[in-house]
Every structure is written in structure tokens, then in C-alpha cells.
Length: 559
Image (cartoon, rainbow, N blue to C red):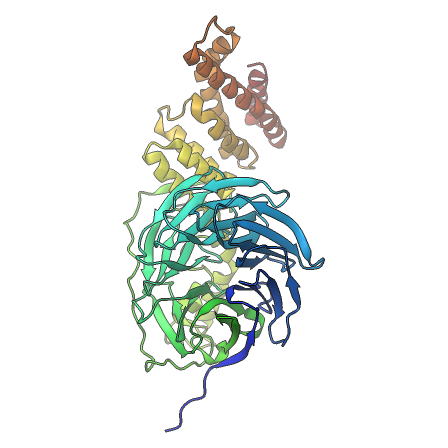
């Protein structure tokens, strides 16, 4: 029996540096360029498929240990063993920024529109302002060298992973640790946010790929242990499939809906594979490996790999089932108002966090084909009028379903914070999602509790949410914001007036000064509502809430 032809091509194997290669990175925008760093202190740029380097960049005085492109592949950041970082402009072929701050080797970088992320052997994660050389934030908490860092898709969170298996999520806005994802027992070798859902993927030398739910911060899927450690991972841009790279092969998985299934396995002798990228336009996967001073480039044609083409599973086509997601049980129903999508509903779901572009779980609109295939439900022919009608209706309402699901997930998260008595956490979740309609639902929930869950200290967090609600067209939502603002004004206006009017006391009275500072801050944020109330009055001119908004604006302005 003849042996089937390989499903990969080893495109190139070339000497990239005069010394050992220490790091490689494929440009994700085009998947057609590669940057390498080495012991020779140089940063070299390559066009995939070309025989010679496109550019050689110098500037570091010690070995280069991490490299990365920006999204547009116009800049390259490189970190060195000395702890310094340099950013190169590829058009000018020179260093445009140099930063220092790490006490030891810079082992990982990410360069995006949100800034520059760096992780180091000194166990710290730093966020840098690209407009200057300043450190915007330093996150401390790892106990081993940080090897991987990523911005979340909305730039508000940072994920980091270290050699001791720790994976941490940091809140960039609040400047603090959100959670640690516990599960890996060996060094983490890869870290990626899901392209469209509230998920994070990690892989490790412990031979597994894990998928984490960023709504609950729990582990939802894990692949079975491989024979060797997983060296790299990548999400397919469609979000439905995950690639994992071992020293001797490539695996293709689907994680949603559970259980996780291995679709295919491609035997590949790429050994020290370090990075992968999917070239969507050509339906190919590009991989890069390095050993000593040589770099290898590999191409996998995905039309020969299941489920993207016909494929042929190396294990006889056997599907491998992994740990399945466990749901924590339904939550009580939560009312959803109609302003966001023009409809109303009452439903329930699991807790949600973050502010990504799409809801957690399988993508609505892909669900029909995901479960039944392109032809519809079993037994329904391609020309079946009922099937065609259902598909047409489903496709026509994808936008509404996505909006409602995204809104519901964020509402459930804020509701869980309120249930635990953490109003500030709920308000922060609402602000992160960027949808004033979720704020309207939270305001109505606060009113429904019929008890004061707010205080002077929470007003700076609550007022921005009220400002967002006041911009909505829904009279019901604006009415709720006016009612809560009125209650707050009546509850605190006297103590604010009295405390702010008192002069500073002779000597040091810290309790009084702190109380006065809180009252002055509360007065300023409440007065800032006057402008939004004026806008609300104009937007609803002629209605009863317009007069109420005008009266309340005048009272706040004179607070």
C-alpha cells in the first residue's frame, strides 16, 4: 500500500543569524513576513518565501530575546537580555523609541494600538505609552519569568503567563489583578484571546490546551494530554477551531459547542515550532520553527485538512472527546428593556464580563450550519420550503439576537455583583461593556431593591452610568435615571451642602478632611449631570420628563 503524500511543505530552512536564534514572530496581518532576533544582537526581517533577509536592524547591546510586529506590520518591537526595549520603524529602518525599566531579560512583547506590553524574567508585566517612553502600569504578582502577554480585544484587560504555569488577568483601567486562572502545571507556551468570544486559550508544556471562560473565569474545555508538550496554539479567524502544535505534528480542534473534538492531525517534523498564523485568503497555515542559528518555515494547505477540506485523520478518523463545559445552573430571570434592539424580553443566562465585540457561546447565525450543516435539519432537502423559510428568518435576525445576547450577558454580570453587595463592581462592568441600555437595566434594578445600595463613595462610579442612560431615546429608561438621580439628590444634598460650607478646622482633623473631600467630589460629579439632564430635556421636549429633567438640572447646578 502506497504511503499518502505529506500535507505540509517545508518552504524554507535557512541561517537567520550569526549566533543562535532566540525568538521569531510571524506578522499576523499578512502572514507573509517574519521577524527574528538572535544572540548576535540583531533584529532581522524576512519575506516568507524569499531567500535573503529584507532588513537587518541594529541598536541593542545584548542578545535580542523577544520580537513582535505591530498590527499594520510597520513597526517592530524588540526586547533584549539587558532589560531594554527598542521600537524600530521599518520604513526608516531605525530606532524610533527606546525604553528601559525591566531589571532583567525582556522575554515577550505585544505591540498594538493600545500600547506596548512587555513581560520579563524579573516577573513583572509593564504597559508602555507609545507616545513617549513612560510606563503606564506595572503589574507585579508572578513568581516566575513572564513568557507571554496579550491585550484583550478591547484593550481593557491584559493577560500574562509565566514559566510556573500561572495565567493572570489584569484590569488595565483599574490597574489591578482581576483573577488567576489555575490549571496548568508546567510552563505556559502559548496565550491567545478568542477573536470574537469571551474566551482565552492557553497551551503548556503539561501537554494540554485549555480554554477559559472570561465570564466566569473558569476552565471550560481542555484537550487530553499529548505525548509531548504543546509548543504553540492559534485560533482560526472564524473562531470555531483551534490549532495546537507539537514537536511532531499539528492538531485541529473545535471547542464550541462542547464536547471538544479533534478533527484532524497532521504529522510534521517541525520540532521547535515557535509560532503559527493562518493566512485566511489562501486557506493556509504558516508555521515557524528554529534550532541553533537556523529558521524553518512550514506551510499547511488547510483544504487538505479536516474540517476545512476533505482531510484525513491520522488516527483513522477517530474523534477525541475532552472535558466538557459545566454550567453553574440557571440564574433567576432578569428584565430586559426594549431600548437596545427595539424589542423586549425576559430571559436568563450565565454571568458575563468584559466588553468584547460579541457574546459568549457559539455565534448566532452560525448555529444553524454548525448543528445541521448547510442543508438544514436532517431529512430536509435543499429545496424544502420550510427549511428555506427558517434559514431566511434566522439570518435576518442575527443582528438583533447578537445584540440581545451581548446585552444579556453583561446584565447578568452586573446583577451578580449587585447580589454580592458589590455595586462598584456592577457599575464597572456596565461601563466596560459600553452599552447604556445595560446601565438602564441596572438603574431599574437598583430602584426595584427599594433600599439604598449606594453611598457618597459610589457616586463617582454611579454618575457616569446615569449620564449614559440619559442619552437613550427610551422614555422609560430616562425616567428611571431621573428617579434615581432625584433620590440621590434628596438623600445627600443636605450633608453635601453642610460639609462643604464648613471651613477647615484648626489643627489636623483627618476624619473631617476626608469627609469633606468625599462631599466635594460628590458635589462635582452630581453637578456634572446638569449638562446631560439639559440634553435629555431637549431630546424629549414636550413630554413630562423634559420638565422634570430641567428642574433637576437647575437644582444640581446650585448644589
